[in-house]
Length: 162
Image 1 (tube, helix red, strand yellow):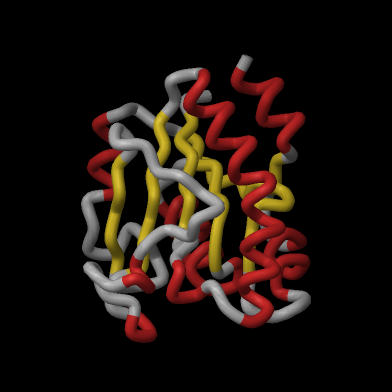
Image 2 (cartoon, rainbow, N blue to C red; image 1 turned 30 degrees about the vertical axis):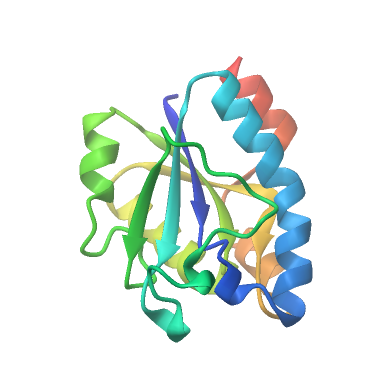
């Protein structure tokens, strides 16, 4: 397995209401995964919405929430669609780096995460949702998405990377 970690749309523009609580809960697991990937020199891709809901590059809403830290050597992909591969360089990056497994974390479970998950399958790659590392703007959506998708726990992820 050659994995990459996706951190999707964990941006300040979405950090309000129930989303804030949900994002804070997801950060606990995302930060563990970030440390695991960094310590093992594995790829991390930050995916950011650009243009949806007034979230525009260069504004505060576009920035990654304070509970997560991006390192300079980690790439950022800006997207305008729910599917992170649509009209971006993401697939090229995956192919160039011989990645076969994508560990997905972030926001919004029922929309951008699930759309990207399905696209990964379309490219004959393996998508896995990191249990506990998804965020949403309403109650119930995360359970629905996890129930119809393949998930991996932090413990399973640690064991698979060793």
